[in-house]
Length: 131
Image (cartoon, rainbow, N blue to C red; front, side, top):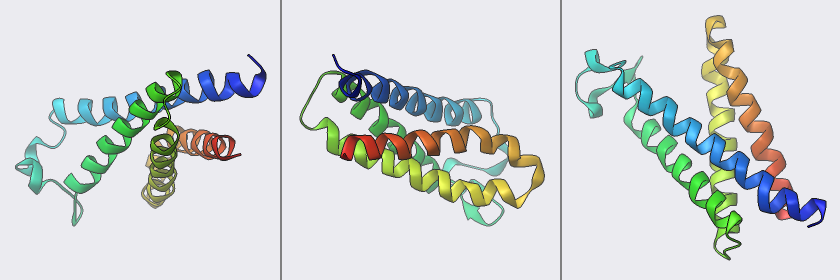
């Protein structure tokens, strides 16, 4: 296996699985820990004036896309490339969008580190998969 095949067939899918699992874990642990329990039912949860459920659903869909695409790339399935590119694009959007939330308050900067690492990985992975 040459270096480009190794990157496409093993490294990128591994990183996608890590990011997808991490996204799902973070939201699941926040929900299970009761972080939002004082905010009513799931569809009432807000951060400031913004409803959280659409964001949470989008994060889970992105995680599912990353995990599905990563598994598909490992298995060399034809559908894996478009699924992976869509999921990586969602990570790029989410990371750029979340940067505004991170930079709004100085105490959130540590949250930005995994977000920005994911952004770099998603950008590089998407470029490699398209090339």
